[in-house]
Amino acid sequence: MTENQQLGGSYWLQTAPDGRHAALTDDLEVEVAVIGGGIAGLCTAWELARAGRSVAVLEAGRIAAGVTGHTTAKVSALHTLIYDKLRRTRGPEGARLYARSQSEAIERAAGIVRELGIDCDWERRSSYTYVRDAGRVEELRAEASAAREAGLPASFVTATGLPFPVAGAVEVTDQAQFHPRKYLLALADDLVRHGGRIHEDTTVLGLEEGEPCRLSTAAGATVTAGDVVVATHYPIFDRALLFARLSPRRELVVAGSIPAGRDPEGMYITPDENTRSVRTAPYGEDGTRRLLVVTGEHFTPGTGDTRARFDRLTAWTREHFPDVELTHSWATQDNEPTDTVPLVGPLHPGARHAYVATGFSGWGMSGGMMAGRLLAAQITGEECEWSGLYDPRRLAPAVREAPTFLKTQAHVAKHFVGDRLRPAPPVESLPPGEGAVVRAEGGRLAVYRDEEGALHAVSARCTHMGCLVNFNSAERAWECPCHGSRFDTDGKVVQGPATRPLERRDI
Ligand code: FES
Image 1 (cartoon, rainbow, N blue to C red):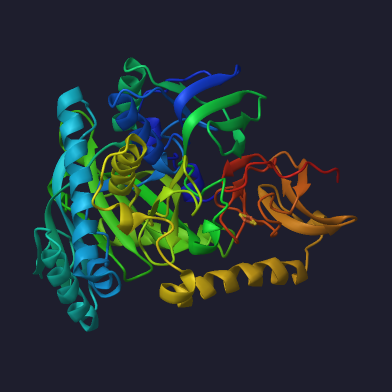
Image 2 (cartoon, helix red, strand yellow):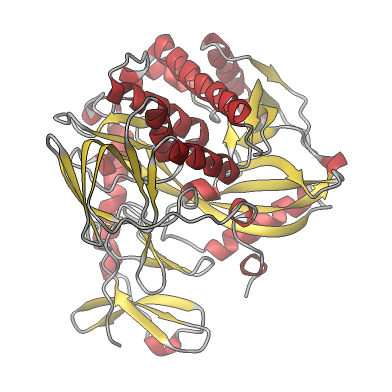
C-alpha cells in the first residue's frame, strides 16, 4: 500500500456533519426538479426556493460529496489564464461579463454566509496565477492587463507569499476560500426550511421533456416538474451532444498541516509543472497550524499511472513545505469545455423547460454559484446580462472550437478503437488490490482481485457509450477514458455521465 492510500480521503468530507436526506420512494410533483446535489444544483435549488418556487433536489449519492466534496474550494474570479483568451475569442465585452458574473457570485456567497451566519471558514485572500519560467512572463502581463480591463482588481506582481521565487504572477485581491461542505450543508438546511426537498440515494434514469416534464428514478418513482435542471457535473441527459464539447480531467490533491507562520497567505495556481495549486485553511483549535491543500498532476481518467502522479505531487509538497505533516489525499474531476466557458442554460436548442450546468473546468465554486443565479433567473423569467455568454447553444463547434473539438473526438476514437486492440494480461498474474481488463468469452472483462484474493468481474464496456474502462490502482476504481465515467470495483457508478452500473460477470 502506498503512502497516499494510507492517508485519509477528502478533508472536507471528514470534517463536516454527516446528515442524511431520505431517498425518494413515492411519486412527486414540484415546480422545479434539480438533478444533482453538488454546488451548482444546490445553489440553483436554493435560489429558486428563496424565489418562492417548490423545488426538489434529486441526488444519486450524497449531497455536496461528489466533485464538490473533493474540490480545492477556492472561490475566485481569476481562473488561471482566461481573460486574455476571452478578450480575443469573445471580445472585451465577453471578458467583462465573465469577470462580473464570477465576481457577483462570490459576493452573493459572502452575503449568504453573513445572512445565515454560516460557520464555513470563509476567508478573504488574494488569488494568484504564477509562473517560474521567465519565458512566460509576457503571458502573465497580458493576463493581468486583460483581467484589469475586464474589471477585476488585478495586477502583475513579482513578489508572493510562496516559499520559492516566481518569475511573475497575476494577483487579484479580495477573493475568497472556504470549507465547501460546511457551506453547502447550511445552504441545504435553509433550502429545506424554505419548503425545498432533498432526496439522496435517488438516481434519475429518464427525462421526458414536456409540459410538464417527467423524470423516472431507479426506484420506480416518477417526478413531475414544470422545469428540470441537469446539474450532474457531466450531463446525464444530453440531446445536444454536449459530451462532444467536454473533456474530463482528473486531478490529485494532498493536504496536511503546516505551522501557521509558514502560511503563504493566498490562493495560488500555476499552469507550469502539470499544474500546482496551493491554498491553506484553518486547522486545529489553537491557531498554531494551518491546513495546506496542494493540487496538481492533471490527467485523463483511465490513463497512466496514478500512483506515480501521487508520488510526484507528494514530493513537490514536501520539497516546498518541508514542515508539512500530510494527513489527507484525494482526487477530483473537472470537465473542460472546448471553448473554455462553462455551459449553463437551456439543455439543447429546442429545450423550453430543461436546463444544464456543466463545464466549470477547475472553477466550480464560483462557477456553480454563478450557475445557480443564472438558472434561477432564467426559470423565473428574469433578465440576466450574461445568459448569452454561457448559453450552451451559443456556437457552432466547427467554427470557434474546431481544433479542441477535433482533438476531443480524436481522443475518444483512439480509446474506442485502440483499447480493444490492447494485449490483455492473464488473470492469474493479478496481485491483490489490482485490476485489469482481460479477454474472456463474450468480450472483455474488468477484473479486480481484492486484498483477500477474491476476484470481482464486471463487463469492461462503459455503460455510457461503450468505450473500455481502465483500472486506477491508486484509487481502486474503473475509469472510462472517453468521457470520464467512474465505477467502483463491483461496477457501481461513482461518477457520470454513465448512470447504469457495469454488468456483473462470472469468472
Ligand atoms: Fe462515455 Fe464511457 S464515459 S463511453
